[in-house]
Length: 303
Length: 258
Ligand SMILES: Cc1cc2nc3c(=O)[nH]c(=O)nc-3n(C[C@H](O)[C@H](O)[C@H](O)COP(=O)(O)OP(=O)(O)OC[C@H]3O[C@@H](n4cnc5c(N)ncnc54)[C@H](O)[C@@H]3O)c2cc1C
Ligand SMILES: Cc1cc2nc3c(=O)[nH]c(=O)nc-3n(C[C@H](O)[C@H](O)[C@H](O)COP(=O)(O)O)c2cc1C
Ligand code: FES
Image 1 (spheres, rainbow over the protein chains, first blue to last red):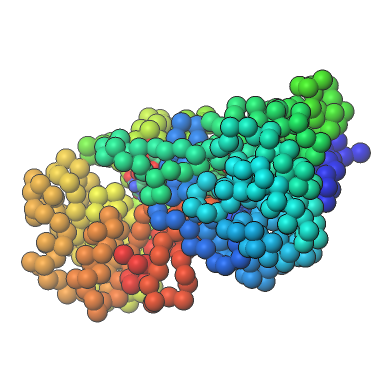
Image 2: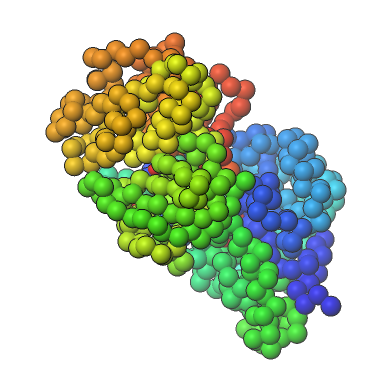
């Protein structure tokens, strides 16, 4: 028996560890360090219909136990991802979750339809929560009705299950979660980054050229845990939790509040081996806690 | 091949105001192939500070499996680094990026090496390698003030060296470009690392010369995965953008839009 096995819509995960979108490119860089087949799944960088250059630099700024980023969804565009990035990943035994971004419903639908047909794409992650582009989805992510309608439109064309990635930059996250569930979402991924700003100590102006950026890393974990805790009590679809995961203990926390798997973002920059290290540490963590299998931990804070 | 290794401190000393010289030892040194490459350092095992710091490789000793960095300690991460003692370890990711092409200078030719502040260090290994193949070098090194000057002796021992300080407290007063205007040196190829305005001024000053420039940008991953360090390109390349960390940090002149 594989103690770490998790079954989710479209995804048979050999373990719950998934590199988060935008923090792992399309896998090639981290493939230099370890066998990517070791991972539960991979969330690839947001893909848009056309090539996007993204925001001016500086695009990142370090903060206390975290970082701000305003990359601006830079990616080589749908055609390139289909022709090069996804085929390269086929040599690994790992399901791909394609992060889909756009400006209007029509872009999302076009990308979702095409990318869901790629053989190794087992699920979509609808990015309605990027805080770093003027019209890049967050307008969908902060309004329940738009979120629900977009989910339904993408569901209608996708060949694989659709997960919707929620923004923490809302007053009532449970409301958005319920809306995307009603729209037909197969699962929820959360959280995307929290909008923040860091000033240059000398000039008093923002360090990031975009002004604001999205906060990630260990600093955001308490916020993410609280939000997963709340959403898991309000929906019946599975949650992939993220926000500050860097250790096996962090993974246990996310599972405890109701996530079924976790994504690891910023921590990859700090330690390129963080994902395999967490995977290796999980069985012992389960022993310490007295659980047979990982799925026994899911939702234990609610019991 | 990029490795992650906990490397031992062999030597650490202050060599100018806020400037430290740190030598580490480990297997990773064997993969250092080109001057101008860099390493990404994690200075603590805690979350404060969180991110790695990019620092250039200033000299390499393959035999002793040692390499040396020269860095300014003025921020949170570099201050912690400057407190590492003999025998302590530093978490190193590297070697990273593409450095200066030594093969672009032929034996018997002259190379102009221009460095500004913390852009000076990688030029030292470059100069050593150029000399090893019989290339002459002219070093023009710019600093804020006499207190910040480092490695004048090391560079002078290799070849002709000029110091420039912004406040005139040592060498020529002003910017490196001021000295270059006056001296009008003859050379075949130039290599430079320093602040972007300096790189830009050099490109303009020598429109017909072959040259290679090393760029700086704030980084996330340091290995090409996060798109933090992307720069715009000119028509000289068919690439729409380049990543400083993995495509650079050194690029031929005229490729990066300045
Ligand atoms: C390819 C490359 C090679 C470099 N080589 C050297 C070298 O040989 N010697 C040296 O002294 N410095 C070098 N630098 C600059 C060095 O990375 C920064 O001075 C250092 O990261 C600042 O960290 P801190 O802890 O002092 O400052 P903090 O203010 O604590 O830094 C906060 C954040 O901003 C980033 N940051 C701040 N300034 C810079 C900068 N100028 N460039 C990139 N990131 C920055 C830090 O990495 C960190 O993530 C190099 C930079 C690059 C990109
Ligand atoms: C540099 C960077 C780029 C990101 N790019 C994307 C992206 O393209 N699409 C997306 O849905 N989320 C993106 N994110 C958000 C992460 O996937 C994740 O939701 C967030 O960083 C919280 O997790 P962490 O604290 O483990 O990093 C990005 C985050 C960072 C730091
Ligand atoms: S620092 Fe991540 S791509 Fe260059």
